[in-house]
Image (tube, rainbow, N blue to C red; front, side, top):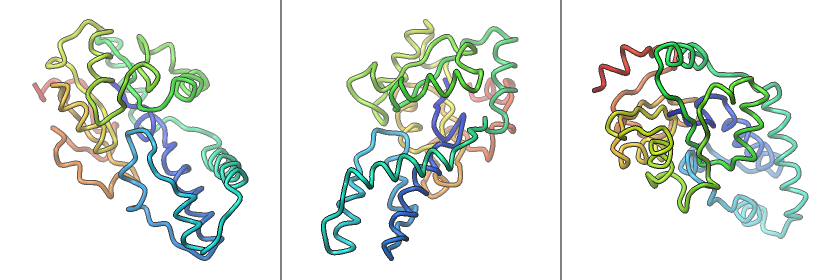
Amino acid sequence: MFDFDGLIVDTEWPEYRAIADIFEEHGLNFAPERWVHVIGSSWDVDWVSELEVGVGRGLDREDLEVQRRERSRRLRDPLIVLPGVVALIDAAAAAGVGLAVASSSPRSWVEPHLEDLGLLSRFAFTRCRDDVAEAKPSPELYLAACAGLGVDPASAVALEDSANGVTAANAAGMRSVAVPNRLTRYLDLGHAHLVVDSLAEIDLARLTALF
């Protein structure tokens, strides 16, 4: 089971950097540590309110959201698959290992990006925020993905970049592999069964050894 944001592609840094740049233009700092706890789950950060408190006045929220989306889009263009992802997909497919994506982002975000990258058809299906009552760190997404593949969670591996994702996988009864990126390296990922710097360090033999 692959997470999407931050694991297949680095969409998380552009989102953070877009907001941090807006803060800097207002003379304020928005440190990574203030953002990383939402990674791997659904957003619950009212960053505009925090910015308004910092500057001491109300701001045009609609304009700021437009700025954030446009800045983030520019920063992630072109979107590039992270190292090791395609090789691991190829190896799993050759070995007959079922593959799915389990993401706390909505399907309208995940599937178009996977399609553009030529990866959507490589997965049996996606399970996204739309499919469950609770996003990660709830195990619901991973349980749904395992059910879709017809596998016991105890025989499945989740590839994650975030603490919320690792928590969700562990709660589902899966093995978890954490691959921290330039944002999630600020998080404690020690509860993962394995932590690596890149998916390029992973092959099927190393995943099998987790069991």
